[in-house]
Length: 77
Image 1 (cartoon, rainbow, N blue to C red):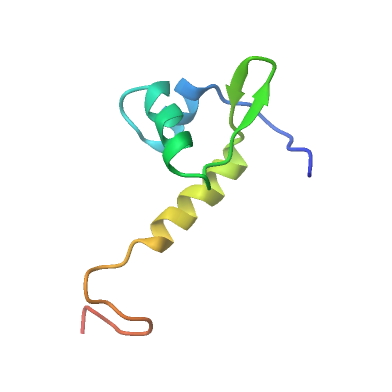
Image 2: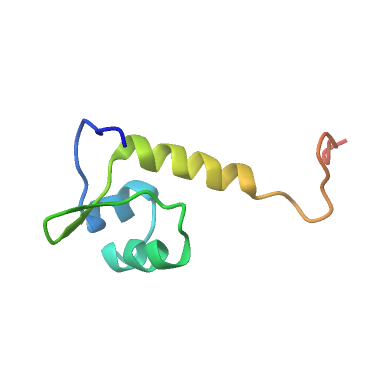
């Protein structure tokens, strides 16, 4: 396991960073629903690293495809 460096975000800060309304509860709920959400425990606190959240968000965006779209197909043509 690699050691992350940089700022550490709380659940509330991570939710705001990701653009979610509802504060930290939204991120804590996502943690249970989406096993790919990167999180760490520091003592009793749940913490997040912006670099990991950036990668997770990019992956989430890449996973969403319009209905009926196939790989390599230009849906705007």
